[in-house]
Image 1 (cartoon, rainbow, N blue to C red):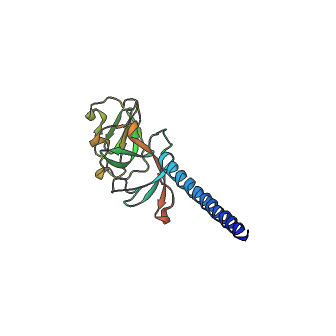
Image 2 (image 1 turned 45 degrees about the vertical axis):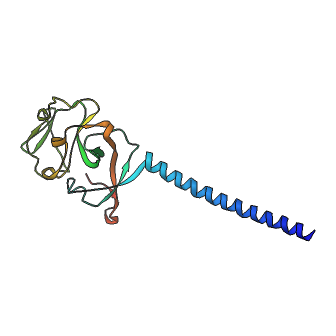
Image 3 (image 1 turned 120 degrees about the horizontal axis):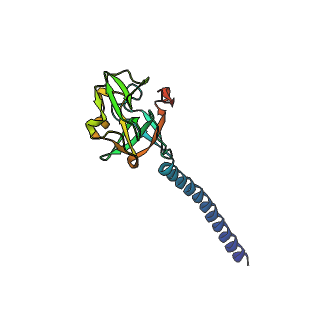
Length: 183
């Protein structure tokens, strides 16, 4: 009889250990699934690669990419796919705009628009050079802030909305620059 009681107690102990293990496993499983879902659909870190956004962003900085943000506005910083690369640029032209640079000044629909975030030279350019009078629906004209060293819409053409991964306006690293991107 004592042996049966011992066997029952041992069996209950094993079941208890198994239940504790399953509860802990389930918690970790939920955490992993939650992190995967957040990174897939909401936000994820992205690293600046290159100097095309200097002085606003510098090589090696880590930003927070907002994947859920699908409303793109002029002068927002976006991340998009281009030939298996993730590029970070600023939206200059939105659908319906005609973009031109003359004498280092931005003209949108023949109206001068100040770019307070830019202190670099921008060579003369007109959207007609890309074969467009205006930017079509679902396309954007993007440029790096370092205009003399940027692979952007002037070279690669207009960016399709479907290629835009999201917007970014927050620096995560280095910690001394933690916070919003200065425009």
